Image (cartoon, rainbow, N blue to C red):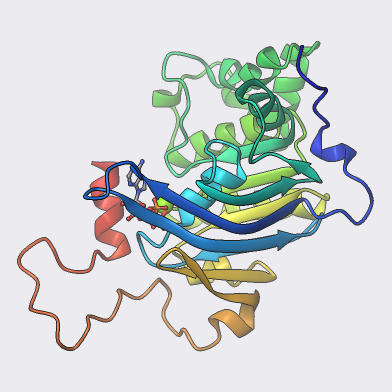
Length: 282
Ligand SMILES: Nc1ncnc2c1ncn2[C@@H]1O[C@H](COP(=O)(O)OP(=O)(O)OP(=O)(O)O)[C@@H](O)[C@H]1O
Ligand SMILES: [Mg+2]
């Protein structure tokens, strides 16, 4: 038997939801020739009920960070306390339990099961948790995200915006205290993206702690706090107007090439976010 795992909702008063110190992530550390230092000592503290955006160029470590914060992956070094619990060293099954009960994850490409209906997709986390009233609770979550009328549709019968509503319903069906969204509007047109953003902001207004990765500064500006990552480190962290104030553009600028660097050949220049995502979606 494993030790009982507290839910995030059981955190003591004043305890931050996220308390990460010195997080490092090295992919393929055992093979120095292919090792990637994706996080180089990131510390982040997020209080209960906060909403923040994470911005930064492609490859700066945003998704790596989200996967660790969402207990989908572990840091190579550093400590991570989620609502006061040390999750960096937790056993796999305990980690899975914390993840399922306490965290809702929303991905850019929805990650829905293709052969399951919208309702069945939303029921899954409840099934894993051994919950009761699965059907009713899943339907209520679909109602909250405004997509209950499509509950019997499969993902390929839904638009991108509708799929993301289903994915958000799945993320919130267990009423997690923390919702992590990695480019939730990245695959959507601006109108659907706006509706999804409003939905996430409404969740936050209801008390859910919210972390959103985005390339879109217009999205980031709508959240009170912005963390800017660069090269596996936090380059800025503060009020969104202060962090984004100098950045005039709508989207993450491509990194400025070093003046002495040789001209990149075709396809190997600094990846713009647009190109990177086009590639990912392909
Ligand atoms: N599973 C993996 N194995 C090896 N390297 C990886 C892995 N996942 C990510 N990386 C590398 O780690 C670095 C950070 O990647 P990450 O996905 O966190 O960036 P990102 O900021 O989310 O970028 P994007 O904006 O393109 O989504 C990149 O250099 C990437 O190539
Ligand atoms: Mg990413």
